[in-house]
Image (tube, rainbow, N blue to C red; front, side, top):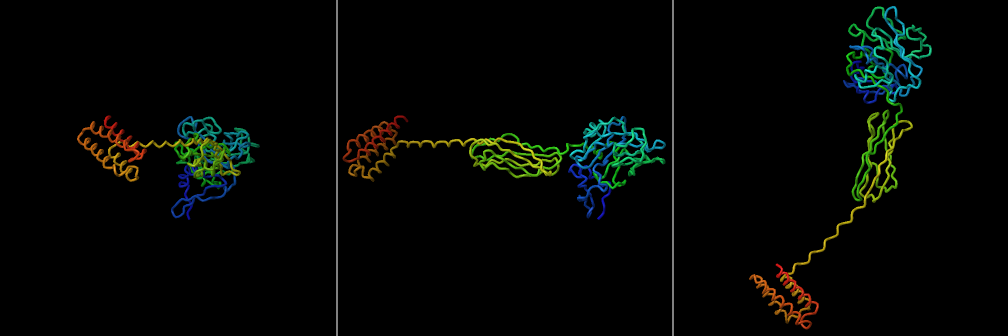
Length: 439
């Protein structure tokens, strides 16, 4: 097993930051196993410091230098009140002089992401970030120096000399290679960079601290993307949840509404649902926990097709991985309209009057005994004449025969044809005759 090089660690640093790695109590240690870089959980930084200098940029090409910055990193929410950031001169006869002193205000803390940024207003244009504590351009000297995080009590004023009695939490030295340069507080020294003062330095892994120069690599004095000044996020920021618009459907039609929630400095891991009134058919869909701090966790409100019509107030609550868990809720109104009445079945079309229909009615009467067989031949012959006239195109003659048929069945009723059947046959014959006159 071979330890990864500082250059390899530096290349992975922005990606590790994006994934939320690097908190001191869960410091990321990278090792090279079988040619693959793998993250392994490690302990807190060797020194155990809750607040560290993590990245500094004190010089770059161009002037004025409004992009100087010092980034702190440590335990989220760690207090900074009572601490000062100092730059101690390391050159020649002025070595040991406090050139810069920045006192952190009471109540200042590391953010929920573990960072705090001191820097110039030019960081907005260069890196798109706003410092938590803004300092003037060219605050830091462009010479050998020791940057240190020191307890304010007992610290001398600017232009006074350090005494060695200061309580120092962390320090790093930068050198331009001057033969008489001096550094203070036992700081690891970085530089020179090609014979010049480094633009700055950054830890290869956020918060990985062994108090040696091996923890650091050069910053980019050309303001490249390897510099990653990071301001604080709100400490212990509450999560937020979004249920989207109200949901409206119709009884018998299933529907759903998306839900998402995120915690700026934590992860949403679970969701619960409360529905009033509860029909038992409005439920949560698949829950996808957040993949990283600040990333969304997602689920959905699912309305089954069997949900009765009505209005339901659904409240979704998201829960984070904090201890105790934080929560955020959102509400969605579910409206289920009644299913529409079914379309009525259309009335069946009445049969079209026809000679064939008359023949069928006559056959049915003979079969039932309502038409006496002795007169059947008379009726059959009359209908045969109707069909012959129709075949010859003589509709008037056919209509006259139909009228005669109606009179005939009426005349022999009730002796030879039952009254009801006679009435039905006469009405059918009249209908066929009428249809012929209208065609």
